[in-house]
Length: 199
Image (cartoon, rainbow, N blue to C red; front, top):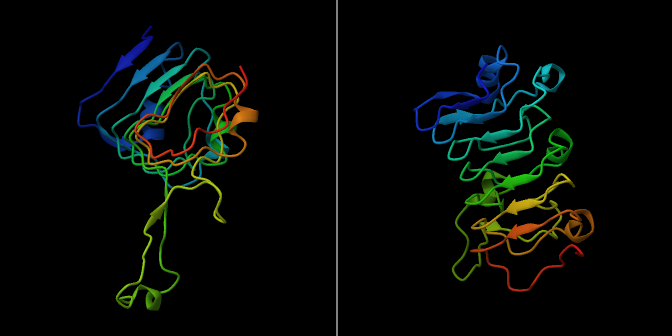
């Protein structure tokens, strides 16, 4: 039985759910490395059919793929390690923690966890007068839109969010992430040390 499967650097072009359908006969599979390909996530919500027969599947590397968004992600809930580095995601959505509740290691470095300011109407996109300050992207977490990091599974022990354009952590971070052992916030524009979980 295949336990570990590596298809990285293969110019593979498909959506993530279709990739996992290929693994369905491999019920004992534990690890998949599909990094450096052209894997995307289907925009259709497939939660109703998002069920997998895997009981030991724990590791997934889909880094360096044009994933773009995680809201409709369909993955085995048994995953404990996932690498989403350099996948062009801008948020970690509210349903992420629920979908991957057993997650212990999360790598999201190299993603721009920011809100992009878009004009409300075509008229608002007209050229502003000279001297106007225009903000095109922000990464503060306390704004009306919410936070780019909307949820994290509470079991996460290893979190790498380096080079993600974040300036602060969510207000709930210190209270919720009690099991955190390793935190990498390097290469971000954090001007003040955030509240961290009590050790």
